Image (cartoon, rainbow over all chains, first blue to last red; front, top):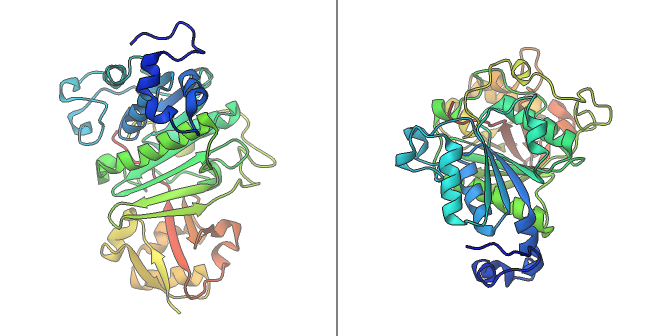
Length: 279
Length: 93
């Protein structure tokens, strides 16, 4: 589909493609153009990144960055809808880019086939307006949290394990991941999805909430989940909201921060960062 | 004066798979003692050897985090719903 030469004017094709959004006054033509000008970075092209990326691409988010250093494994396909059986062995960022561009050729998909580290993260997130976290390990979660706070980027957070998911939005100054969980569990205390399992369809529930919150932030509509943590229990089919707040004693976003630059997150979490970042 | 305690997936092996159990106690600390008596091992998943709540576990009374109330001494009243909330980051290595 041809892009409009003048980005301030929607083409007839764009008006048709996005018509079910544009017709709603909360989006409108102006909101659609805002989506098309926005840049969102997804950490992980896996269980959570798959549905989030597909809804963001479908909505016409202009640039979607994907950070994932992993290749597609057959065991990913039970839940990671960005990748096909034929993609096994390929870099996830490559199969994800193909899927997203097939869905919406107007979207620019930027693959970052790297592991996020304290050395590279600030340079990567600088190019984006919003970061969406679907990381599978604690070092990356704390790294992304701290980097987003230092760079003043909204962070749309999601996590899943077994039949449960959590989601929230961290806005700088309104609490961060460390306010919620000041320190990571010791290695082995919380099982990974590979060790314990994860229910596939759960990914879409939490990923869809992350996409929703991201689009709301871009459009400036509704009430953000900042300060509220959603808990979803698929077995009980129970959704609950819990409150959290900025902790004045938080070492990163508190009143007297003791961490003012990125640290060694592997040492902080007491373990090496796993080879992958996606659920 | 039993209260409802919601048990997260990762701790359900300790409570025979139950999603919620009853607990008794006037404070969160007493409630954890009560859970430990009936579900041995529970305390060690919530509290450090020195008896402090782990920083990767949150306990909520209704929708408030006890860290912002009176921590383990936060009173528990009939009808309260206690939620145990461990950090999740699971994914495939």
